[in-house]
Amino acid sequence: LTGQPVLIGGTMGTCSYVLTGTEKGMRQTFGTTCHGAGRALSRSKSRRQLDYQDVLDNLKSKGISIRVASPKLVMEEAPESYKNVTDVVNTCHDAGISQKAIKLRPIAVIKG
Image (cartoon, rainbow, N blue to C red; front, side):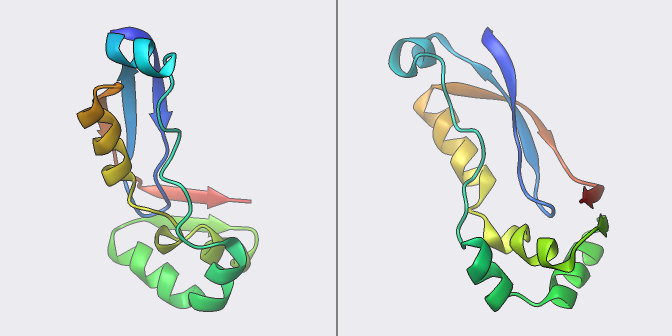
């Protein structure tokens, strides 16, 4: 175990990860790794392309409860608005710059 464990946040509807550092990561990246999946859609494109109720229904079908202050946040932060966090984490793991330690799954989301 090298460095501090780091939380790599997924989306409202996908898993998140805890990663640990590696010696290779210290040498090649000064101990840095990904910090999330990154956006696949801009916030404005998400609002235009995604349907509020469809996003809520998708989360509900996965057993995920959501409470949100603004409906536009639902589309902006929808799982479809982001790249696949598992692919990003696997790339870092396979490159040896960090190691997967724990995979977490969402059960509730509070946005506000």
